[in-house]
Image (cartoon, rainbow, N blue to C red; front, side, top):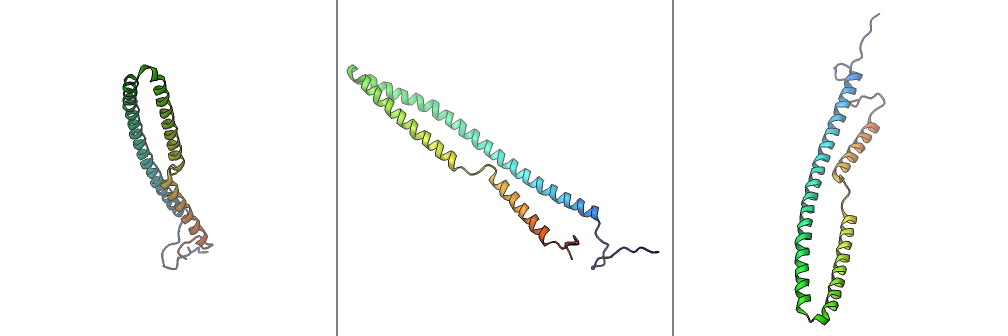
Length: 146
């Protein structure tokens, strides 16, 4: 009784299940590594942008507030003492309108920003679609070559 091993059409040895599984695992690991690396780059870029934005906002708030208060004080001290309350009410109304405008801008910016990790998610979706297409087009025997 002799058991012969089936040969592939190209004359090479038949594929081994564990070798195929190992190759599949290595491919999946390489894909995951690439996607995690991309996510790390995106997170680092977002963190740098956020830190820069926060530092700029801090400078804007501190120096802008000091400058506006100085101008307001100069104008209030320059007018007739009987008109100072009206001038202060005018400045308060202007400052509140500006605050409302900035609030609207912040809300609009947050509403229109791109989704978090957009490029990473797009790449992962392409990977999923490619793997699904490959699994559908693979013949029943599981050999992608024949």
